[in-house]
Image (tube, rainbow, N blue to C red; front, side):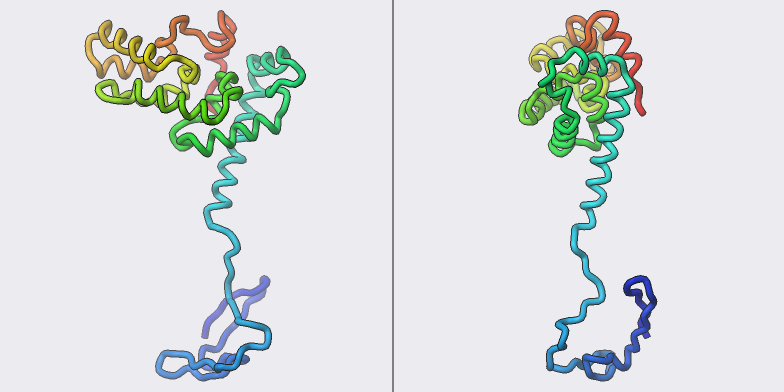
Length: 221
């Protein structure tokens, strides 16, 4: 006897006799009638969508919600909105969400904190998806290849403005840090904890003291 559930109610199916299909359990097998069922083939279970679809949508929605918490919770982001023209991307919430989801789908979302990156430097949202991917690849080759082997995803989460820098210049600055510290491993630790030291001004998008204040204010949520 097999127990299953259908439309919220429990249904018992006698494995010896199955009404409607004809046949008796014999020798461990079911003998079915060759006549077609009047209502078509019986299916006990049906899957209409991939089991991963719901999980993917959930993570995207979670990242969008987190982005808005970061965006609305910081004076720097609010200043970006108020100082932008009326037709600016920053005044179009749906477009911002669309760009965030696009970036999440083309970048390693499990390693990069994409909501944090977009909130730290909103200029990245103004770039096309292709431009962001190309910048990510350049930075990864410049800082992630041997012998530096930096964790580029960690560095970009803390200093997303690196995506807007020249990759060759970043590598040159990184080797200057190696020379000043004395060994690659110590320089790697320093760069991963303070990636903005590679930039000439060492400041965030807003610039000046406001940029430094914003860098301290944005925390992981």
